[in-house]
Structures are given as C-alpha cells and as structure tokens.
Amino acid sequence: MRIAIPCDEPDLKANVGSRLGTSRYLLVVDLRTNEIEAVPNAGTPGQGSGGIGAVVIAVSKKVDAILTGYCSPTAEKYLSASGITVVTGVSGTVEGAVERYKKGEFARDVGIGAKSESAEAGVDRAAVFSALRRSFNQFVNLVPMLAGIVLLIGLFNALVSREFLASLFSGNPGQDTLWGACFGSIFTGNPINSYIIAGELLHSGISLFAATALIISWVSVGLIQLPAEAGALGRKFALVRNGVSFVLSMAIAFATVIVLNLIRGWFL
Image (cartoon, rainbow, N blue to C red; front, top):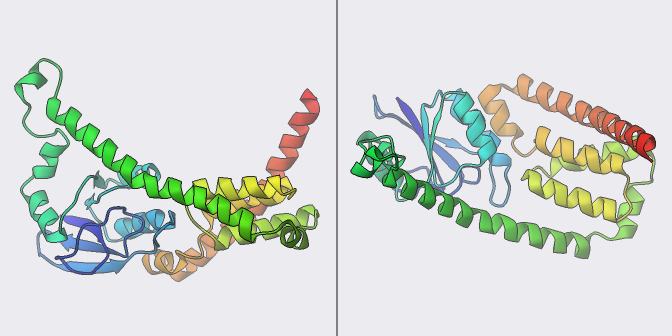
C-alpha cells in the first residue's frame, strides 16, 4: 500500500500541502516497508499546472491513495480513473496524516465507517458535516485563485499595451495562431486564467485565431511541467506529446474559427 502526500519540505514533520498542485513535493510513503520517497512536484504557487503533474507522478509511482488539503476536480477525476483514492480536507503534519490513515480515521471522516443512529433513518450526520466541512475548505482554498484572477486582469491591462499587442499580432491568421499557441504553451496555468487572457486579447482587437490557440495550448502543452513529465513518463514521450499537442492546438484553433464563421454565416 502506497500513499502520497503533498508538502513543501521533503520531511515527515512538514505540514500537509493545502493544494495538491502547488506543493513543492509529493511524499510517497510505502506503508508495508515504511520506505519514503520525496518527489519534486512541477506545480508552482498561483498556477494550476502542477495538478496534472502531480497526477502523472502519482500514477507513475503506483500510488493507491493521496491525502491533501484540496484537489481540483480535474485532477481528482484523472486520479479516480486511475484507481487512486483522493482524501481531501487533510491538515497537520505528514507524519500525523500517515498515522491517521493507518488507523482508518479518514474512512470514518468521509462516512465510510460505522453509521450513527440517524443513518438508519436515512440521514448520516457525520457524512453531511464532513461534506460541509470539505466544501468550506475548498471554497477557502479557491479564494486566493479568485483574487489572482482579478489581479491578473488589472496587471494585463496595466502592463500590456495595445501597441505591443499590435506589433505581435498583425492580423495574419497563420502568424496570430502561431503566436497564440506559443504564449499558451509557455505561460501554462489554471484554465480559468487562459479564458481571462484570451478575453482581454479579443477586447484589444486581437483575432479569434490567436485567442483560441492560446486557450487550447494553455491546457494541453506544458513547458513548465515538462521536466516532471519527462522524469515520470520518459523524455521521448514527453517531447513527442507536447510537440503533437502544440501542432494540434493550432490546427484545432483554425478549425474552430472556420466552423464558427460558417455557423455565423448560416444564422446571420
């Protein structure tokens, strides 16, 4: 049985990471042999790219469960599909979390343990309170991201001038699509941020080709997490996957804009 716990220091005394994707390490603990391995995570504070990087690490290390403060729905979906149990709302030290997991306390926290008398009547109070607590913790963890989005909009408007954008995006579909894919590949982060940046580009008069390419490459190409992906899945696979995703992001952007224009032509 192997479990993984995000943390910012490669030590059992470190605190459990509040977010799976932004913790500096994944501490993999083998409960049978007590072997411990600290694996660097690709995530960085304020970005969502590390969530997928953590998924890659967990799958490659054949982890059975992950204990974390918060896990994004996308990362949790991939982890669950790989047969990995995700336990959120975990706090305290890594060592304490491991001991609680060994004792089965997390199973009771999520309502898997013994049921109370109210459960016999169809309502499991422990499960309800646990769900409410986890929802509150997730909301608290989302507040910094929402604040970051507001700050991102302000910084984009203040630092990126229309003249600078006009010098990069000339209105040529091919060139605009290439630049959009390049920026999306480099500045990998939370998908929500890509919508904000793409929206600001459109508001500044940049073509839909560039905005669409940016959104697609933002979530499919990850230069920031490339080292972690190469370490977990192999250098050749990581390079080929990212290269193919980069080319496809431009092709899909072209196809999307062309289809959208055809639909507009039919209804206008």
